[in-house]
Every structure is written in structure tokens, then in C-alpha cells.
Image (cartoon, rainbow, N blue to C red; front, side, top):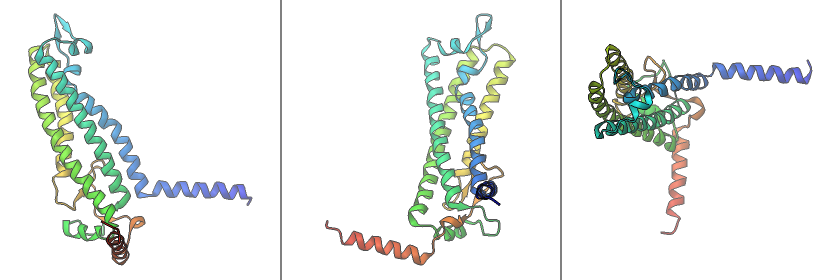
Amino acid sequence: MSAEEKNELSCLEKCKAKQNDQDFKQKMGVSTILILELYRVLMGAFLIAFVPQKCGENICSISENLSRNSILAQSTIAANSITALAFFALYFIEVKRENKLITYLEVNKFTAVDNDAVGESLKNLPITKRNTILRYDKLYQNTGYVSTCAFICNTVLSAYVVYNHYFDSKTATVFLTNVLFMGTKVSDVYTTVNTKKNIFFSAYLKQKVQFNDVDPDKYVTLDIEQDYNSSNDSTVEGQPI
């Protein structure tokens, strides 16, 4: 076998190994779902734009829906935009959190999934990576609560404006569909974040996959971590104040 053939075979083997790798599969799944999630935000946040409404005897165009001069309509359009921004921020943090979970942790069917057991597993991570996971999880929780409040306020304001420009049954159908479309996301976020400190559910991998063990690539023994922390402490103590 020539050197070129050996290189090709090696590349094929690496590709197959990558495709079978849990981290790779999970990240590809997240990328695919994220595209659909962004569509959900646009439809669920900009209710004024995408819900059929009445202009004279006809259905308003999107530009007509967005160009109303009343203070209430303009305020609601602003609420639509704020809600969209809140959810874009949520998705940004959600993806960062998911990436950290996939990179540092593992879904292990043979390991306990309760809060204390996962907390013990986290001790096998370097403390900086452990704190990064906890920080993103808390930030995701707070952003989720803010986005939920924005969604509720936006829905109420939009419902009032849409009601005043009701056209036919399509108005109610599209409005309810878009609200439920976004509502399922809000419900998912609440389920994901409303957990104990060391319970990390995936936001994208459905059937609520729980990351409950440290990724073998990121595993560090307690002795090594203690030596690392002691070294850092010694360095800090030796610095002038």
C-alpha cells in the first residue's frame, strides 16, 4: 500500500471516528435545531408583523402592519423588537452553555444523575471549567426569566392591537399558533433551568438529556487539581500587595 493510500485510509478512519464521537453528534444536532429556533423567535416575537390584520377591506401587508401611527401600535412594535432581542440573547447564552456542557461533560447511562452525585463528578474537572459551567447555567436561568416576562408582556400588548384590527378567523388562528409556538420554547426553558445546582439538562437534545459525568478528555484527578490550586495560592501569596 502506497503512502498516499495510507493517508487516505487514515483520513477516512478519523472521519468515521469523528462521526461516532458523542460530542460531534451533539454539536451537529444543536446546529440543526438552532436554525428552526431562530425562525420560531421571529414568528413568535413579531406578532404585529406576521398576524393577518384588517386594513380597510383587505388584509394588511407586513409594511402596513409596521407603519401604524398610533402610540399603542408603535409601543407594541417596540415590545415586539425588545422581545426578539431578549430571545436572541437567550439563544446566544443557551448555545454557549450547551457547548460548554457538551465539551466538558458527558451523558453517562451508568452514572447516578442526582444533584449530589453529579456534584461529586464535577470535582473531576479543573475548578475553572467547573465554575464556567455553573456561571453559564446561572446566566441562562436569569436570561430565561427575563425572556419569559418579555414574552408575556409582548403577547398581551399584541393581542390588544391585533383585536382592534381583526380581519377573520385567520387572525385568531395565526396569532394563537405563533403564541403557542413561542410558548413551547418558554416552557422548555423553564423546565431546563428550574433545577438544582448540579442538574444540567440539554436545551437542544430532546427527551431532556442530562449531562451527569465529566468528559473523559477533560478528566483531572483531585490530587492534580489540589496541586494546581496550591501552586496558584503560593503564587498569589508571593506577590506584593
